[in-house]
Image (cartoon, rainbow, N blue to C red; front, top):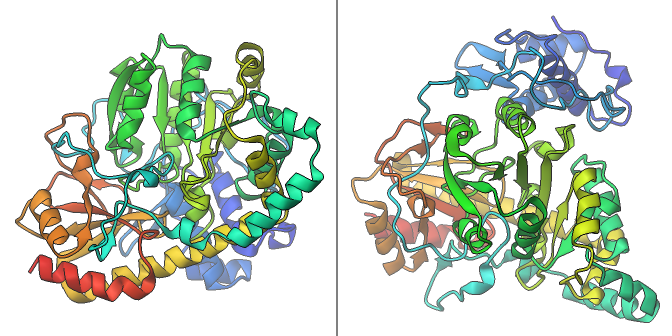
Length: 530
């Protein structure tokens, strides 16, 4: 039986402290791979905590891939990939922000592996990806919202390819007041500073504070670069890392990502997904030295990269002159449990570049994104690309800094998350009522989109066409596969993949509707597919 002194939790909640303790012991081998964890009831009684506390800790560990459940058998520790502890940080203490977070890359034999052992060389893994129509769905994205590219047709009941929530709920009066205050208070010097290549020092510091508080990332303002949307930052990444590289992108994935990299004259490798995330057995021989990934909530499949796969990715990057671009596009909108820890926070080899955008939270009208570089690359950026003028208006940067510092940004994101969660729950409930056992869902609560699967003999294209005739625009998952693959796989209820089946799959966005319209939408889809 495990023993943890819950009185040492400091400022942590009971469930978070227990989660961190168990994660620490799994990552460091104290809990052996495959070892069965105590039952939730027994552990709660042993530690003197509630059953809910243990359930919450186990659920978070399972979401991150540290443990796996077996039906009617309980929970077992996952077998993690080997990882060399490059450095031991002061954060690795019980009760602090990064309790026992494994850092580093290959070298030692601290065993690790994800559930299903999908990383083992030569093993066949189920993959997501279907026949790829060359026409692309409307603006659904993984790196930043391209929502402004599409105007929803007035006759539609719902457009699941287009987000309107952030724009509708944005506190315009508060923003206008913030802008006025910025104009009256800021000097010409601070406006000039915001025009520098990396952007406003004030905004960069506000983002660094936000990342420390909400993503557990301890970075300095000097490591942050502001850009006018993620697409601008992609260009800077290519210039920084060099064009003589092959960039790996996930498939299915954000449709425009590969095209934007190709326009920068770099080679592209489309790498499929398996149950743990991007498929390592395909990434390794691809020739790529940069991998652009969405580990916290893969777009569009919704997979959360497992703890084992995260180690494997860090190992891969450390073994050569390789880098990972971590696209954390909607991490703020995880609706259950703790946010998934970013790869950046466990990278001790300085091989992860962290990318995020304000498009999901502020709306497509605010074209601002940011890049967090490892210290060595940050120095290289300032030396090599520091002559650029920043692409974001100095006034917008300074106003956003104040917006974040005042707590207005946090309150706005909380409102968005609450509304999206209500819309998701209402829609899922209504669809289950109208479509019964023929419908199932994966990726619920992981972010602003999830997958709907249907039991139907019709093709995805036929089902989507029928839905559109009834006023519902919906995007098939297969439209996001740019690899030319002819195989199909489905996302399982755990958010991972299962062997190929003909089951149609569609992407639903909880930020595309409101809860009140869920019943009407579900009825329309039921009529369309009757």
